Length: 502
Image (cartoon, rainbow, N blue to C red; front, side, top):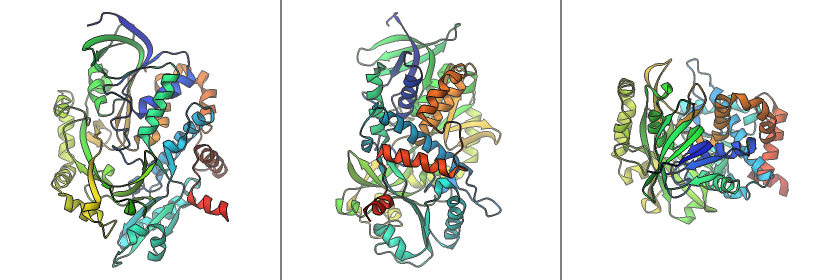
Protein backbone atom coordinates (compact mmCIF):
# COMPACT_ATOMS: atom_id res chain seq x y z
CA UNK A 1 0.00 0.00 0.00
CA UNK A 2 1.14 3.53 -0.83
CA UNK A 3 1.07 5.82 2.22
CA UNK A 4 1.20 8.95 0.05
CA UNK A 5 -2.05 10.93 0.33
CA UNK A 6 -3.24 12.38 -2.99
CA UNK A 7 -5.48 15.40 -2.42
CA UNK A 8 -8.06 16.81 -4.82
CA UNK A 9 -11.23 18.90 -4.69
CA UNK A 10 -13.48 16.45 -6.55
CA UNK A 11 -13.36 12.71 -7.18
CA UNK A 12 -15.65 11.15 -9.78
CA UNK A 13 -16.06 7.38 -9.52
CA UNK A 14 -16.88 5.72 -12.84
CA UNK A 15 -16.13 6.90 -16.37
CA UNK A 16 -19.68 6.84 -17.73
CA UNK A 17 -21.96 9.55 -19.10
CA UNK A 18 -22.88 10.82 -15.62
CA UNK A 19 -19.32 11.47 -14.41
CA UNK A 20 -18.44 12.87 -17.84
CA UNK A 21 -21.34 15.32 -17.64
CA UNK A 22 -20.67 16.43 -14.06
CA UNK A 23 -16.96 16.83 -14.81
CA UNK A 24 -17.65 18.92 -17.91
CA UNK A 25 -20.08 21.18 -16.02
CA UNK A 26 -17.74 21.66 -13.05
CA UNK A 27 -14.81 22.49 -15.33
CA UNK A 28 -16.87 25.39 -16.74
CA UNK A 29 -18.06 26.58 -13.32
CA UNK A 30 -14.86 26.08 -11.32
CA UNK A 31 -12.02 25.71 -13.85
CA UNK A 32 -9.30 25.81 -11.17
CA UNK A 33 -10.69 22.93 -9.14
CA UNK A 34 -8.67 19.73 -9.31
CA UNK A 35 -10.82 16.83 -10.51
CA UNK A 36 -9.77 13.18 -10.47
CA UNK A 37 -11.63 10.27 -12.10
CA UNK A 38 -11.30 6.57 -11.25
CA UNK A 39 -12.55 3.88 -13.63
CA UNK A 40 -12.15 0.14 -13.06
CA UNK A 41 -12.11 -0.69 -16.78
CA UNK A 42 -9.53 0.16 -19.42
CA UNK A 43 -11.46 3.04 -21.04
CA UNK A 44 -14.49 5.28 -20.73
CA UNK A 45 -18.09 4.42 -21.53
CA UNK A 46 -17.81 0.65 -21.43
CA UNK A 47 -20.75 -0.27 -19.19
CA UNK A 48 -24.30 1.18 -19.28
CA UNK A 49 -23.20 4.20 -21.33
CA UNK A 50 -21.83 2.03 -24.14
CA UNK A 51 -23.78 2.22 -27.39
CA UNK A 52 -24.28 -1.57 -27.46
CA UNK A 53 -25.65 -1.60 -23.92
CA UNK A 54 -28.58 0.81 -24.31
CA UNK A 55 -31.21 1.80 -26.87
CA UNK A 56 -29.71 5.22 -27.66
CA UNK A 57 -33.10 6.90 -27.42
CA UNK A 58 -32.85 10.58 -26.66
CA UNK A 59 -35.63 10.09 -24.12
CA UNK A 60 -37.94 13.04 -24.57
CA UNK A 61 -41.36 11.37 -24.11
CA UNK A 62 -42.08 11.59 -27.83
CA UNK A 63 -42.71 7.84 -28.12
CA UNK A 64 -42.52 6.28 -24.63
CA UNK A 65 -46.08 5.32 -23.72
CA UNK A 66 -45.19 4.43 -20.11
CA UNK A 67 -44.47 8.13 -19.46
CA UNK A 68 -48.16 8.98 -20.11
CA UNK A 69 -50.34 6.67 -17.97
CA UNK A 70 -54.10 6.62 -18.28
CA UNK A 71 -55.81 7.75 -15.09
CA UNK A 72 -58.88 6.14 -13.50
CA UNK A 73 -61.16 8.71 -15.13
CA UNK A 74 -59.80 7.87 -18.58
CA UNK A 75 -57.73 11.04 -18.99
CA UNK A 76 -54.02 10.96 -19.78
CA UNK A 77 -51.43 12.14 -17.24
CA UNK A 78 -48.72 13.96 -19.20
CA UNK A 79 -46.83 15.32 -16.16
CA UNK A 80 -43.85 12.97 -16.45
CA UNK A 81 -43.75 13.37 -20.25
CA UNK A 82 -43.34 17.14 -19.88
CA UNK A 83 -40.67 16.76 -17.18
CA UNK A 84 -38.58 14.28 -19.20
CA UNK A 85 -38.87 16.34 -22.38
CA UNK A 86 -37.81 19.53 -20.63
CA UNK A 87 -34.86 17.68 -19.09
CA UNK A 88 -33.77 16.50 -22.54
CA UNK A 89 -34.00 20.08 -23.83
CA UNK A 90 -31.52 20.99 -21.06
CA UNK A 91 -29.12 18.29 -22.28
CA UNK A 92 -29.39 19.57 -25.84
CA UNK A 93 -28.59 23.10 -24.70
CA UNK A 94 -25.49 22.00 -22.80
CA UNK A 95 -24.20 19.93 -25.71
CA UNK A 96 -24.82 22.91 -27.99
CA UNK A 97 -22.83 25.16 -25.64
CA UNK A 98 -19.89 22.77 -25.79
CA UNK A 99 -20.01 22.64 -29.59
CA UNK A 100 -20.44 26.42 -30.02
CA UNK A 101 -17.43 27.06 -27.78
CA UNK A 102 -15.26 24.51 -29.61
CA UNK A 103 -14.95 22.40 -26.47
CA UNK A 104 -16.20 19.38 -28.40
CA UNK A 105 -16.74 18.95 -32.14
CA UNK A 106 -18.51 16.84 -34.77
CA UNK A 107 -21.87 16.41 -32.99
CA UNK A 108 -22.96 14.04 -35.77
CA UNK A 109 -20.69 11.49 -34.10
CA UNK A 110 -23.02 11.31 -31.10
CA UNK A 111 -26.46 12.65 -32.09
CA UNK A 112 -28.56 12.25 -35.22
CA UNK A 113 -32.11 13.34 -36.14
CA UNK A 114 -34.56 10.45 -36.21
CA UNK A 115 -38.37 10.27 -36.09
CA UNK A 116 -39.86 8.91 -32.86
CA UNK A 117 -43.06 6.88 -33.16
CA UNK A 118 -45.53 5.00 -30.98
CA UNK A 119 -47.38 2.02 -32.48
CA UNK A 120 -50.39 0.20 -31.00
CA UNK A 121 -52.91 -2.49 -31.97
CA UNK A 122 -56.47 -3.08 -30.84
CA UNK A 123 -59.40 -0.73 -30.27
CA UNK A 124 -58.62 0.08 -26.63
CA UNK A 125 -54.96 0.85 -27.36
CA UNK A 126 -55.84 2.96 -30.40
CA UNK A 127 -58.25 4.98 -28.24
CA UNK A 128 -55.51 5.40 -25.63
CA UNK A 129 -53.01 6.58 -28.26
CA UNK A 130 -55.51 9.05 -29.71
CA UNK A 131 -56.20 10.52 -26.26
CA UNK A 132 -52.45 10.69 -25.59
CA UNK A 133 -51.91 12.51 -28.87
CA UNK A 134 -54.70 14.99 -28.11
CA UNK A 135 -53.28 15.68 -24.64
CA UNK A 136 -49.68 16.12 -25.79
CA UNK A 137 -50.07 17.91 -29.12
CA UNK A 138 -51.53 21.07 -27.53
CA UNK A 139 -48.29 21.46 -25.57
CA UNK A 140 -45.57 23.41 -27.44
CA UNK A 141 -43.01 20.70 -26.67
CA UNK A 142 -45.04 18.18 -28.68
CA UNK A 143 -46.85 20.38 -31.19
CA UNK A 144 -45.34 18.68 -34.27
CA UNK A 145 -46.69 15.25 -33.31
CA UNK A 146 -48.92 13.56 -35.91
CA UNK A 147 -51.49 10.80 -35.41
CA UNK A 148 -52.83 8.33 -37.94
CA UNK A 149 -54.96 5.18 -37.88
CA UNK A 150 -54.86 4.91 -41.69
CA UNK A 151 -52.87 1.81 -42.77
CA UNK A 152 -51.89 3.55 -46.02
CA UNK A 153 -50.38 6.45 -44.08
CA UNK A 154 -48.61 4.06 -41.74
CA UNK A 155 -47.12 2.24 -44.73
CA UNK A 156 -45.60 5.55 -45.78
CA UNK A 157 -44.24 6.16 -42.27
CA UNK A 158 -42.97 2.65 -41.48
CA UNK A 159 -42.83 0.52 -44.64
CA UNK A 160 -40.89 -2.34 -43.05
CA UNK A 161 -43.39 -2.63 -40.19
CA UNK A 162 -46.39 -2.60 -42.54
CA UNK A 163 -44.93 -4.92 -45.20
CA UNK A 164 -47.00 -8.14 -45.52
CA UNK A 165 -49.06 -7.15 -42.48
CA UNK A 166 -52.62 -8.49 -42.21
CA UNK A 167 -54.85 -5.73 -40.86
CA UNK A 168 -57.44 -7.62 -38.82
CA UNK A 169 -57.72 -5.15 -35.93
CA UNK A 170 -57.44 -1.36 -35.49
CA UNK A 171 -53.88 -0.06 -35.71
CA UNK A 172 -52.54 3.45 -35.10
CA UNK A 173 -49.30 5.36 -34.65
CA UNK A 174 -48.00 8.77 -33.71
CA UNK A 175 -44.94 10.29 -35.35
CA UNK A 176 -42.78 13.27 -34.55
CA UNK A 177 -39.77 14.16 -36.71
CA UNK A 178 -37.83 16.04 -34.03
CA UNK A 179 -36.68 12.89 -32.24
CA UNK A 180 -33.03 11.83 -32.04
CA UNK A 181 -30.73 8.84 -31.78
CA UNK A 182 -27.96 9.48 -29.25
CA UNK A 183 -24.76 7.44 -29.13
CA UNK A 184 -24.06 7.85 -25.42
CA UNK A 185 -20.91 5.75 -25.67
CA UNK A 186 -19.43 8.10 -28.25
CA UNK A 187 -20.57 11.17 -26.29
CA UNK A 188 -18.99 9.79 -23.11
CA UNK A 189 -15.66 9.23 -24.87
CA UNK A 190 -15.79 12.70 -26.44
CA UNK A 191 -16.45 14.33 -23.07
CA UNK A 192 -13.60 12.46 -21.38
CA UNK A 193 -11.22 13.54 -24.13
CA UNK A 194 -12.38 17.11 -23.44
CA UNK A 195 -11.83 16.65 -19.68
CA UNK A 196 -8.35 15.26 -20.31
CA UNK A 197 -7.55 18.37 -22.38
CA UNK A 198 -8.82 20.48 -19.45
CA UNK A 199 -6.31 18.88 -17.09
CA UNK A 200 -8.63 16.40 -15.36
CA UNK A 201 -6.69 13.37 -14.08
CA UNK A 202 -8.34 10.21 -15.43
CA UNK A 203 -7.13 6.91 -14.00
CA UNK A 204 -8.29 3.78 -15.81
CA UNK A 205 -7.72 0.31 -14.33
CA UNK A 206 -8.29 1.83 -10.88
CA UNK A 207 -10.98 0.39 -8.60
CA UNK A 208 -12.30 2.25 -5.55
CA UNK A 209 -12.37 -0.33 -2.77
CA UNK A 210 -13.46 1.76 0.22
CA UNK A 211 -14.31 5.31 1.26
CA UNK A 212 -14.69 6.92 4.69
CA UNK A 213 -15.34 10.47 5.84
CA UNK A 214 -12.84 11.91 8.33
CA UNK A 215 -13.35 14.42 11.14
CA UNK A 216 -12.70 17.36 8.79
CA UNK A 217 -15.53 16.31 6.46
CA UNK A 218 -13.17 15.17 3.69
CA UNK A 219 -13.47 11.73 2.10
CA UNK A 220 -10.59 9.26 2.21
CA UNK A 221 -10.63 6.67 -0.57
CA UNK A 222 -8.66 3.47 -0.90
CA UNK A 223 -8.12 2.86 -4.61
CA UNK A 224 -6.54 -0.27 -6.07
CA UNK A 225 -4.27 0.29 -9.05
CA UNK A 226 -5.15 -2.88 -10.97
CA UNK A 227 -2.12 -2.70 -13.25
CA UNK A 228 0.45 -2.36 -10.47
CA UNK A 229 -1.47 -4.24 -7.79
CA UNK A 230 -1.05 -1.54 -5.15
CA UNK A 231 -3.59 0.37 -3.06
CA UNK A 232 -3.41 4.16 -3.20
CA UNK A 233 -4.88 6.72 -0.77
CA UNK A 234 -6.83 9.66 -2.16
CA UNK A 235 -8.64 12.48 -0.37
CA UNK A 236 -11.37 14.75 -1.73
CA UNK A 237 -13.76 17.41 -0.47
CA UNK A 238 -16.53 16.06 -2.72
CA UNK A 239 -17.15 12.57 -4.13
CA UNK A 240 -19.60 11.61 -6.86
CA UNK A 241 -20.42 7.92 -7.18
CA UNK A 242 -21.45 7.47 -10.81
CA UNK A 243 -20.42 3.86 -11.25
CA UNK A 244 -23.69 2.56 -12.72
CA UNK A 245 -24.62 -0.74 -11.12
CA UNK A 246 -21.48 -0.49 -8.98
CA UNK A 247 -22.75 2.62 -7.22
CA UNK A 248 -24.87 0.82 -4.61
CA UNK A 249 -21.97 -1.09 -3.04
CA UNK A 250 -19.88 2.07 -2.75
CA UNK A 251 -22.81 4.05 -1.34
CA UNK A 252 -23.26 1.37 1.32
CA UNK A 253 -19.55 1.53 2.19
CA UNK A 254 -19.81 5.31 2.66
CA UNK A 255 -21.82 4.77 5.82
CA UNK A 256 -24.06 7.82 5.31
CA UNK A 257 -27.51 7.39 6.84
CA UNK A 258 -29.14 7.92 3.42
CA UNK A 259 -27.69 4.55 2.33
CA UNK A 260 -29.69 2.68 4.98
CA UNK A 261 -32.61 0.53 3.76
CA UNK A 262 -31.64 0.97 0.12
CA UNK A 263 -31.28 -2.06 -2.13
CA UNK A 264 -31.01 -2.90 -5.77
CA UNK A 265 -32.52 -5.43 -8.15
CA UNK A 266 -30.51 -6.20 -11.30
CA UNK A 267 -32.25 -6.68 -14.66
CA UNK A 268 -30.25 -7.64 -17.71
CA UNK A 269 -31.38 -7.11 -21.28
CA UNK A 270 -30.94 -8.60 -24.73
CA UNK A 271 -31.49 -7.07 -28.15
CA UNK A 272 -32.00 -8.63 -31.54
CA UNK A 273 -29.66 -6.84 -33.97
CA UNK A 274 -30.25 -7.09 -37.72
CA UNK A 275 -27.33 -8.38 -39.78
CA UNK A 276 -29.00 -7.83 -43.17
CA UNK A 277 -28.18 -4.36 -44.63
CA UNK A 278 -31.16 -4.51 -47.02
CA UNK A 279 -33.57 -4.79 -44.09
CA UNK A 280 -31.73 -2.13 -42.08
CA UNK A 281 -32.13 0.32 -44.97
CA UNK A 282 -35.93 -0.15 -45.03
CA UNK A 283 -36.50 1.31 -41.56
CA UNK A 284 -35.77 4.83 -40.36
CA UNK A 285 -37.34 5.56 -36.96
CA UNK A 286 -37.57 4.56 -33.33
CA UNK A 287 -40.92 2.79 -32.94
CA UNK A 288 -42.14 2.06 -29.40
CA UNK A 289 -45.01 -0.23 -28.50
CA UNK A 290 -46.79 -0.92 -25.20
CA UNK A 291 -45.24 -3.01 -22.45
CA UNK A 292 -46.76 -6.40 -21.75
CA UNK A 293 -48.85 -6.71 -18.59
CA UNK A 294 -46.48 -7.32 -15.67
CA UNK A 295 -43.44 -6.15 -17.61
CA UNK A 296 -41.16 -3.49 -16.12
CA UNK A 297 -41.18 -0.10 -17.90
CA UNK A 298 -37.65 -0.59 -19.28
CA UNK A 299 -38.92 -3.63 -21.21
CA UNK A 300 -41.22 -1.69 -23.53
CA UNK A 301 -40.68 -3.31 -26.97
CA UNK A 302 -39.20 -1.04 -29.61
CA UNK A 303 -37.71 -1.26 -33.10
CA UNK A 304 -34.85 1.22 -33.31
CA UNK A 305 -32.74 2.66 -36.04
CA UNK A 306 -29.32 3.32 -34.50
CA UNK A 307 -26.19 5.12 -35.67
CA UNK A 308 -23.05 3.32 -34.46
CA UNK A 309 -19.61 4.13 -35.86
CA UNK A 310 -21.41 6.36 -38.38
CA UNK A 311 -23.26 3.37 -39.80
CA UNK A 312 -26.99 2.66 -39.58
CA UNK A 313 -28.04 -0.34 -37.49
CA UNK A 314 -31.38 -1.86 -36.49
CA UNK A 315 -32.19 -3.12 -32.97
CA UNK A 316 -35.28 -4.78 -31.53
CA UNK A 317 -35.96 -5.43 -27.87
CA UNK A 318 -35.21 -5.36 -25.10
CA UNK A 319 -35.87 -8.85 -23.83
CA UNK A 320 -35.46 -8.95 -20.08
CA UNK A 321 -33.12 -11.37 -18.40
CA UNK A 322 -31.71 -11.90 -14.97
CA UNK A 323 -28.17 -12.02 -13.65
CA UNK A 324 -27.08 -11.39 -10.07
CA UNK A 325 -24.32 -9.16 -11.46
CA UNK A 326 -24.72 -5.38 -11.00
CA UNK A 327 -22.43 -4.70 -13.98
CA UNK A 328 -21.76 -6.72 -17.14
CA UNK A 329 -18.18 -6.99 -15.90
CA UNK A 330 -19.33 -7.53 -12.32
CA UNK A 331 -19.46 -10.55 -10.00
CA UNK A 332 -22.17 -13.17 -9.58
CA UNK A 333 -22.02 -12.27 -5.88
CA UNK A 334 -23.03 -8.60 -6.46
CA UNK A 335 -26.70 -9.02 -5.51
CA UNK A 336 -25.94 -11.16 -2.45
CA UNK A 337 -23.19 -8.82 -1.26
CA UNK A 338 -25.62 -5.88 -1.40
CA UNK A 339 -28.02 -7.47 1.10
CA UNK A 340 -27.43 -6.22 4.64
CA UNK A 341 -29.29 -6.19 7.94
CA UNK A 342 -30.59 -2.68 7.27
CA UNK A 343 -32.11 -3.49 3.84
CA UNK A 344 -33.03 -7.19 4.00
CA UNK A 345 -36.66 -6.56 5.00
CA UNK A 346 -36.93 -3.78 2.40
CA UNK A 347 -35.72 -6.24 -0.25
CA UNK A 348 -38.07 -9.00 0.90
CA UNK A 349 -41.06 -6.62 0.93
CA UNK A 350 -40.25 -5.51 -2.62
CA UNK A 351 -40.02 -9.13 -3.74
CA UNK A 352 -43.42 -9.91 -2.24
CA UNK A 353 -45.02 -6.90 -3.96
CA UNK A 354 -43.48 -7.65 -7.35
CA UNK A 355 -44.39 -11.29 -7.97
CA UNK A 356 -45.71 -10.37 -11.43
CA UNK A 357 -42.29 -8.98 -12.32
CA UNK A 358 -40.60 -12.16 -11.07
CA UNK A 359 -42.97 -14.28 -13.20
CA UNK A 360 -42.30 -12.04 -16.21
CA UNK A 361 -38.50 -12.34 -15.81
CA UNK A 362 -38.71 -16.13 -15.56
CA UNK A 363 -40.82 -16.28 -18.72
CA UNK A 364 -38.36 -14.02 -20.53
CA UNK A 365 -35.40 -16.16 -19.45
CA UNK A 366 -37.04 -19.27 -20.91
CA UNK A 367 -37.59 -17.75 -24.37
CA UNK A 368 -35.73 -19.38 -27.24
CA UNK A 369 -34.41 -17.34 -30.16
CA UNK A 370 -37.33 -18.53 -32.31
CA UNK A 371 -39.77 -17.32 -29.66
CA UNK A 372 -38.03 -13.94 -29.59
CA UNK A 373 -38.34 -13.76 -33.38
CA UNK A 374 -42.09 -14.38 -32.94
CA UNK A 375 -42.22 -11.29 -30.69
CA UNK A 376 -40.27 -9.35 -33.33
CA UNK A 377 -42.91 -10.38 -35.92
CA UNK A 378 -45.41 -8.20 -34.07
CA UNK A 379 -43.31 -5.34 -35.46
CA UNK A 380 -41.90 -6.95 -38.64
CA UNK A 381 -44.39 -9.59 -39.84
CA UNK A 382 -41.98 -11.29 -42.27
CA UNK A 383 -38.89 -11.29 -39.98
CA UNK A 384 -36.52 -14.24 -40.54
CA UNK A 385 -34.36 -15.67 -37.78
CA UNK A 386 -31.20 -15.78 -39.91
CA UNK A 387 -31.30 -11.99 -40.38
CA UNK A 388 -31.00 -11.29 -36.65
CA UNK A 389 -28.36 -11.89 -33.98
CA UNK A 390 -28.90 -11.83 -30.22
CA UNK A 391 -26.75 -9.31 -28.32
CA UNK A 392 -26.53 -8.97 -24.52
CA UNK A 393 -27.16 -5.37 -23.41
CA UNK A 394 -26.10 -3.65 -20.20
CA UNK A 395 -27.14 -4.42 -16.65
CA UNK A 396 -29.68 -2.13 -15.00
CA UNK A 397 -29.99 -2.05 -11.21
CA UNK A 398 -33.43 -0.84 -10.18
CA UNK A 399 -33.56 0.95 -6.84
CA UNK A 400 -35.46 -0.59 -3.92
CA UNK A 401 -36.18 1.71 -0.97
CA UNK A 402 -38.77 2.57 1.64
CA UNK A 403 -40.84 5.60 0.74
CA UNK A 404 -44.27 7.13 1.21
CA UNK A 405 -45.76 4.24 -0.82
CA UNK A 406 -44.67 1.75 1.82
CA UNK A 407 -41.83 -0.55 2.71
CA UNK A 408 -39.77 -2.11 -0.05
CA UNK A 409 -40.83 -0.15 -3.13
CA UNK A 410 -39.20 -1.01 -6.46
CA UNK A 411 -38.40 2.26 -8.22
CA UNK A 412 -38.25 2.65 -12.01
CA UNK A 413 -36.18 5.67 -12.89
CA UNK A 414 -33.13 7.54 -11.67
CA UNK A 415 -32.45 8.34 -8.00
CA UNK A 416 -29.98 10.87 -6.59
CA UNK A 417 -28.86 10.14 -3.02
CA UNK A 418 -26.64 12.62 -1.15
CA UNK A 419 -25.38 13.27 2.35
CA UNK A 420 -26.84 16.17 4.40
CA UNK A 421 -23.52 18.07 4.21
CA UNK A 422 -23.42 17.70 0.40
CA UNK A 423 -19.96 16.15 0.45
CA UNK A 424 -21.00 12.97 -1.36
CA UNK A 425 -23.66 12.06 -3.91
CA UNK A 426 -24.53 8.83 -5.68
CA UNK A 427 -26.66 8.08 -8.72
CA UNK A 428 -28.74 4.91 -8.76
CA UNK A 429 -31.29 3.52 -11.17
CA UNK A 430 -31.86 3.46 -14.90
CA UNK A 431 -33.87 5.06 -17.73
CA UNK A 432 -34.27 7.89 -18.63
CA UNK A 433 -30.88 8.49 -16.93
CA UNK A 434 -28.42 9.28 -19.73
CA UNK A 435 -30.84 11.47 -21.69
CA UNK A 436 -31.47 13.65 -18.65
CA UNK A 437 -27.87 13.59 -17.37
CA UNK A 438 -27.42 17.37 -17.46
CA UNK A 439 -30.57 18.05 -15.41
CA UNK A 440 -29.54 15.37 -12.91
CA UNK A 441 -26.09 16.93 -12.52
CA UNK A 442 -27.63 20.38 -12.04
CA UNK A 443 -29.76 18.84 -9.28
CA UNK A 444 -26.57 17.53 -7.65
CA UNK A 445 -24.98 21.00 -7.86
CA UNK A 446 -28.04 22.52 -6.17
CA UNK A 447 -28.03 19.93 -3.37
CA UNK A 448 -24.27 19.65 -2.83
CA UNK A 449 -22.89 23.12 -3.65
CA UNK A 450 -25.61 25.58 -2.51
CA UNK A 451 -22.95 28.05 -1.30
CA UNK A 452 -21.67 28.43 -4.88
CA UNK A 453 -24.97 28.68 -6.75
CA UNK A 454 -25.27 32.47 -6.69
CA UNK A 455 -21.73 32.77 -8.04
CA UNK A 456 -22.31 30.07 -10.67
CA UNK A 457 -25.79 31.03 -11.86
CA UNK A 458 -24.71 33.46 -14.64
CA UNK A 459 -22.43 30.80 -16.14
CA UNK A 460 -25.10 28.12 -15.79
CA UNK A 461 -27.53 30.36 -17.70
CA UNK A 462 -24.89 30.92 -20.37
CA UNK A 463 -24.61 27.15 -20.79
CA UNK A 464 -28.34 26.45 -20.38
CA UNK A 465 -30.39 29.56 -21.26
CA UNK A 466 -33.63 28.03 -19.92
CA UNK A 467 -32.14 27.10 -16.53
CA UNK A 468 -34.88 27.46 -13.90
CA UNK A 469 -37.55 28.16 -16.54
CA UNK A 470 -40.49 25.90 -17.46
CA UNK A 471 -40.87 25.58 -21.23
CA UNK A 472 -44.25 23.88 -21.50
CA UNK A 473 -46.23 27.15 -21.40
CA UNK A 474 -43.78 29.22 -23.48
CA UNK A 475 -44.28 28.36 -27.19
CA UNK A 476 -41.96 31.05 -28.56
CA UNK A 477 -39.13 30.05 -26.20
CA UNK A 478 -39.53 26.38 -27.13
CA UNK A 479 -39.33 27.29 -30.81
CA UNK A 480 -36.27 29.48 -30.26
CA UNK A 481 -34.36 26.93 -28.18
CA UNK A 482 -35.17 24.01 -30.45
CA UNK A 483 -34.22 25.95 -33.58
CA UNK A 484 -30.88 27.01 -32.11
CA UNK A 485 -29.92 23.59 -30.78
CA UNK A 486 -31.06 21.96 -34.04
CA UNK A 487 -28.70 24.21 -35.96
CA UNK A 488 -25.69 23.80 -33.67
CA UNK A 489 -26.10 20.02 -33.33
CA UNK A 490 -26.93 19.50 -37.00
CA UNK A 491 -30.42 18.19 -36.26
CA UNK A 492 -32.22 19.16 -39.44
CA UNK A 493 -35.03 16.64 -39.44
CA UNK A 494 -36.67 15.12 -42.52
CA UNK A 495 -39.66 17.45 -42.57
CA UNK A 496 -37.40 20.53 -42.47
CA UNK A 497 -35.21 19.03 -45.22
CA UNK A 498 -38.24 18.52 -47.46
CA UNK A 499 -39.41 22.09 -46.80
CA UNK A 500 -35.93 23.49 -47.50
CA UNK A 501 -35.67 21.70 -50.87
CA UNK A 502 -39.06 22.80 -52.24
